Length: 518
Image (cartoon, rainbow, N blue to C red; front, side, top):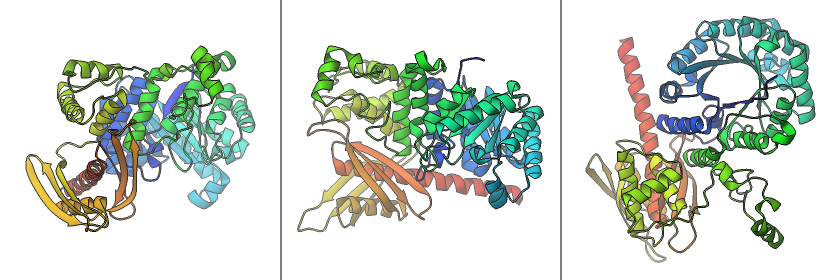
């Protein structure tokens, strides 16, 4: 059996199901391109039938991203499978991923189907998917709580029907590594025709065991691992892709398996996903957390200074953390900025470089030295911008302990200036109310936070916030500036732009639908 393990990344499907995460088509495409650079084997781009937006995202990724398989998720229903194929059919390698629950608890309470009905539906779904593409994956949802003999029957039947990958999900994160490894081993031994398919696992992290369970599965015969960058996803999340990759890379002496991943792209992928989803990576997170390569104890510091491997089992550069001391300033030119960006893995078009250079020059008037972290913040802020959106032109604040906080805000769109003023409980509240006056949209801010990009009095403030209008759809915004209030205004405008973009897109789709029906 091959020691090659395939990485199936579901950041854009299961990962986006994290509460409060809502990505635009452009943001999803950016993440997909970075996942391709990382070298994952399959990108699960979304669930096409779930919404017009998801269909559009999957279709855009299938067209734009090369060198990787693109999968669309579908329930074991013909309409889902047809829609999934319509979305992924332009990919270099198109995969349809169909699923149905197999545990008795799901059959009784969710599906209200018998075992035989589920078996028939699974086989029919795989055959339908196989009529479109030779790359078909089947998942037995809640496999970890499914009767073993019945699970084997279902897997054997879908393989005979044409499934080329069979996925065994621990949907609720219930499994323990030892028993999970035994289950996978028994499946590899018992299921008829299993040698015709790749055995995959999709482990959730409800007990904090998703990565451990994934590795136990690989040791026992699985050759595909499903997960998400930073471990994001439903409830407690999925197996963290970067942890799975680095565990196999660092302990290949013990495990003996390998992936096709380019490890130096891990950190950049983590930062991009964190930035665009608004889900901060905890400081002590393995591999990509801020403290992963930090040493505070004197004994540790002394050891690392003498020999890095005394306390570091991985080299930070291995995952793409740059230790470059190159500092740019106001006299640095466009070429120096381009070189620094390329060193960091950002390859920009001339238009994108011009925009980044303008932001860089503006920042260099406020800061004496600009570090790599500052530059990353500039680029990542620009990545979250939408075309033809509102931009902050100016901001005037009047505030203090004895005056009512007042904000005057100027926003531009396509060269036209819109201005309004408002009072609030504080300067940030006043800014938001002024923006609401301009847009005519009343938003509720449900979360606001700030981080310093670098240290010092002139550090960039990185504001992240979330807004909603109905309590259901949540929109994330990000803004950076050496002025916290300006950063807050930028973040709020960024979130409102996303809200407007999604609402306009939905309205346009509805208008097209009405026109077709009439």
